[in-house]
Length: 287
Ligand code: CNA
Image (cartoon, rainbow, N blue to C red; front, side):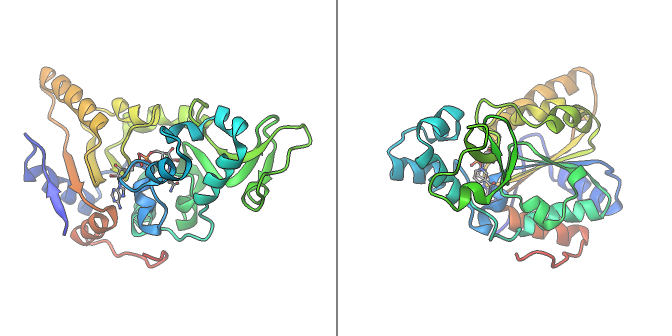
């Protein structure tokens, strides 16, 4: 049921060229941007899809803007609700999906420059993405830390208890994730500029691209960088970047970048793509 939807002024040619580049290995630096959608088939709900975590929280908590739960203010004002929501995002019993396997294939083929994930479920690590290739932009639920002195604790400190214990310094022990309004990890600042400026292919998968500053990373791409979007819907902010880019490219008479959108479930698209380029899927993951 895979649909390959091509946008205006982009012909089949873009898809054909992209597949051929992947087959020939001519794209040397691939950067992946991933979001909650790549873990949905592992039974972890995303935030913004119909029936996703935000919808579930609107019903179960009567909080009309569930985003507020993922703030430091909320953590301190209602830790009971905060930690019960965190337990719903518990992922230590979950296996990586086919799409995580695709990212691993990119790494095994020596193509993966970096994987920037917004996910906090640690499935990129579980599938074997190397630490140096991975930027967990919004942190991870696999560790806990003190909200005061930043001391690191094991995740059991908040998963297994109704209310987590306090640190020796008196601070609250919380998951090591980035809440709205908090700074992103240093690696994000240190690596993103060069990675995005030098990438040959950006693969965007399973994200609505609504969270900043993550969503602005594609602005850094060089005009010739190809973009492959694998998602149920096309992320609107990417459309804007593309329009700006297209205009810039036309003005400077540079060749337009290859731009392909595979609409639908990412596991299906990735399976199709790998067959097309003749990559064998390693059964290291349960998909
Ligand atoms: P989001 O805003 O909920 O968007 C998810 C996107 O994925 C949407 O565009 C969906 O249409 C799309 N989608 C859903 N399922 C599929 C699928 N099977 N195949 C293809 N596309 C699909 O989530 P974002 O990641 O964009 O937002 C960033 C937040 C979500 C980050 O801060 C994360 O920490 C947070 N989050 C993470 C997890 C996780 O780690 N698994 C789960 C829920 C939320």
